[in-house]
Image 1 (cartoon, rainbow, N blue to C red):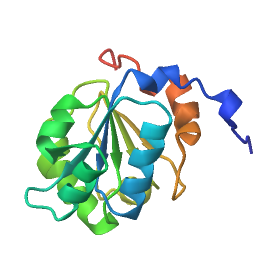
Image 2: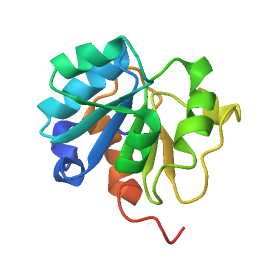
Image 3: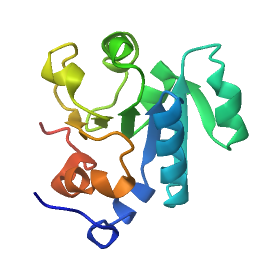
Length: 153
């Protein structure tokens, strides 16, 4: 097993990207703050209309968007909602709205592994396999090109 450290990560690869966190519970909150603290300037929170979490996210200084709008905007989407909701969120809001070459990340791969959702072609979809993931844990996928133009897939 390879262990990645801060020195292994080139944060410049993500600092210029538009990053969307879907959900603002304990994981979404932590991921968003970690990205912000790591110098990523364009972090938005995607929530359903009328979500009680919107005020919390706005109070923390984040832009809040509806999920479909965030999917159109983002280069990177981190799905941090309850597992049982992810398939519907993907099908109803992300599938048709994510731009080609966008990266779709999951805290773990349950929904992808069990075919509860199937990311469409021309997306870079990656399960991270860890709760409380830190930005440096995304670097192996970023280094492999998950955040570069994938329109030629």
